[in-house]
Image 1 (tube, rainbow, N blue to C red):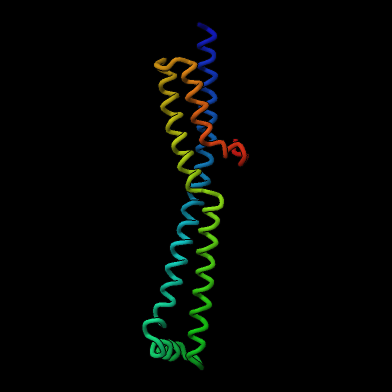
Image 2: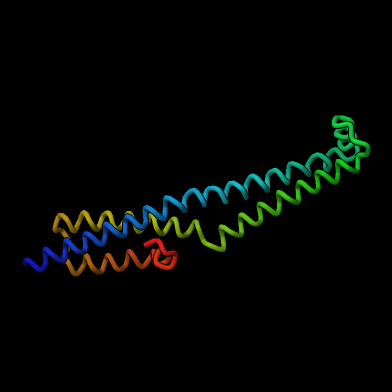
Length: 155
């Protein structure tokens, strides 16, 4: 029985370590996910906004902007708007591709799920409601969902 108690304590310590790694990962990954999403949304929205004026107003719009900023030619307006739209579109595309290539959103979701599972497992383990072998199996299944933490050097 003493071996069982020691094994439960060791598993509980491993769960604590894993949850600390997950919390550290989430502390860094959530803001990154949010930042990339915001850059993508804002960049593509602003790019669209920059092109709507000339698209709907045509020459009258560009001449009005030319007069407002005292530009020598209305073609400068077109060029500046197009250049700004391209820059914002590229920024949005890069942010979207960075988020997708590193799979940030899926990793955050997996880490949050694993953290919740481990919290429940630790409670069941500490209350003695779960046989040790079942707890070990549940632990293995949960941490398999966040195997990317090992490769990212988080542990």
